[in-house]
Length: 319
Image (tube, rainbow, N blue to C red; front, top):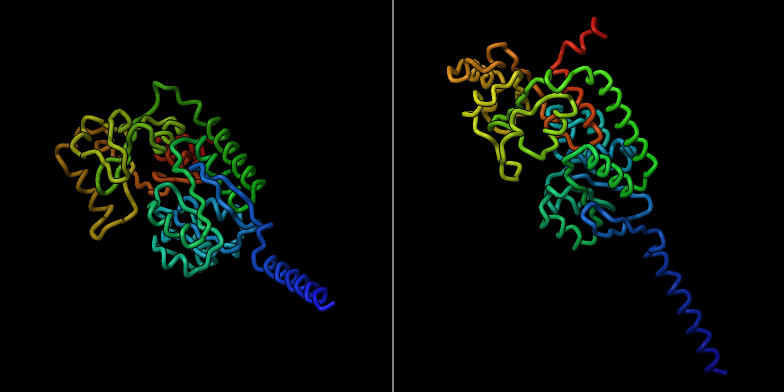
């Protein structure tokens, strides 16, 4: 009889223990999502403390979820020169974070969204601490940008919103093409993007594709440049390229970066006096959020490029 009573007590204790464990670890609420690197990530069904570490994922994220679900954005959020995230949106989230593992972990995120441009060491540190990390691609084409949007949408469990965003991108692109199709290949003008460090652009970059979709020839696309975000072409080849329009930098990365002084330096340099853009005064301030676009706002970058190079197509009188 005593043995039977002990058996019942053991059974009851085991049942309570198992039910308690179930409440602490609700694994049934996790989803398996494959990120853009092919890694499977276990994510909550409804992430509500999301941290984004890049300006592109900031923009996609805020196009999909309410700011109440975002714990922090990248340090670029709210800077109109590099980010499409408005100051109001950044303030609504209330926090920005650098690429610092300790700072990120202190936020206790249930999802961190990064891109392949983020240090693998940082990603590994976050993963080892038990934080789910979704890695999105660095797009180099319009199609890849759609893939990037869909991926982030899967990560936050907002697939329908992702599809709506992609459809909006395609609609805007088609509407722009209606206006720009009047420009034949022989009529396309040449543009050159500059940073304060040198000439932007190389084969196979998204910036070159953005210009192509705007019916603009990328003056730098003829040159092979080693891969890497810090690879620039020397200003010495500006006369050789001879662009119709120069897309000037706006985003000040280092102390001393001054767009007016930089433009004056180009205009007064005798080596550039025969460059068409210099002769015709076509040095156009062009925010880096268009040159380095990495989100659904690629359509705005296409339009901004077209407006900078073909302003006459967008005059009120011609519409």
